[in-house]
Length: 542
Ligand code: G16
Image: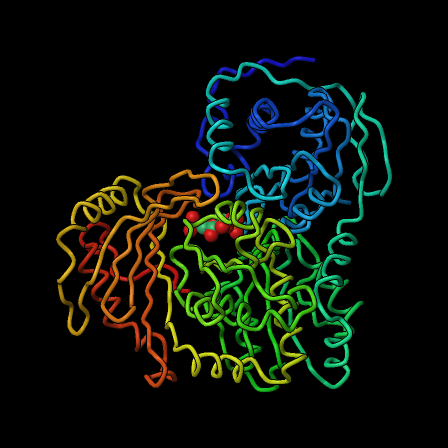
């Protein structure tokens, strides 16, 4: 059956870094989600009778859009839909299911770390057959299609039971409800030394994992408590809730502060970790030791060979541009190439597919490898557990040992949220115009060596992505980066990434805010943050 598009504007908003993200109320408008899903099906590559993977992070409105998508898939010639039980699939688990069952792609329903609930956020992203986020050419084509689409196709059938595993039929489409966790847990067992981790747990190693009432709960409970033997209660907030318990499921110092209090308190366990709304981000914190995502990438890359899945060594390392250069130093020591890509996991896809990189990471708490084509929160946790079990040292010791060998990249990100979009745009435009005049300028002991607006040339497909953020590089390896977020749903968010490099033999044991004070002052002067926005302090520091 064909439905025509209502006259009000619907999905004609450009998908950002991670698909389409809007308030639930926007998605609830008549025809809104349907038109976006139809636009996806109209443009993506798929043979007749293809398989589509479907699942989300369980947030409010998840089940509604799953039922809509099943009907639209049935009317658009898909042969099979694989849907996670209860509508649940973490982003990395969905990537795995797409790859494992040869699906032509998948719809992942999530607004990631953004809050959930009737007045909060919802999102839809499309992943292609390699299991990774749709590349820019595909998201641009989807966007273009949303501008001209005038109908969506659907079938008139009752809702599918999403809670009972097994197959049912919707028109000519087979809908298979699959165990959300089993395939993913099996993949993790194939990569990591579960026996070594279990032995370490038996010897007294303890941890706390905060699932933030989001999608990772069932995965973490199965893997950490049931398969690895961590005590019951190791996984906190382990039941996915539609509103994430009213919290912001972003695993950082601000939103996962309870975990921080545990890890910096008396009786802290040996290891602490958390994951976000859809399970692709991770937070790593040892007893009295926070590990920045940039350091985590570098430490994992330096030690990955200790896990069976990476015993043969790495093919290369990739990091997003604003991520610190800590990983570059590891790559150099290992004789590997290190790629610097724009923000967004999709930019790693070609490198992973081409076998040019094995491990990738982003400052925004994403780390992953070529085992799937998404960043993977629990994967990072398990690799840490594997390394600690083999090395038999604490997180703090491992971090200190790493800095002593490679030097330390002190790092912080300052976010200025919900800025009026015009003001943020003017700030970035003026900053970009001033770049040529910056080299040579000094701010206290800091002297600017180079400044540019980052462009990426994909070494695999030859494409160029320009305007990916302003980099201001200082002599000696320190740096400030400015870019506007691509994932916010309210106004604009300015992100300022601050990085100070201390070489081997330098000041390796200082507090990060002290070490970054000069850079913070320089950043404000260079970009005129206060002048343009009226803000004197960031909303969030991570
Ligand atoms: C998404 C992308 C990440 C990217 C992040 C950046 O994360 O998947 O690869 O690093 O956005 O966000 P922003 O543009 O706001 O800095 P997620 O976890 O939201 O899907």
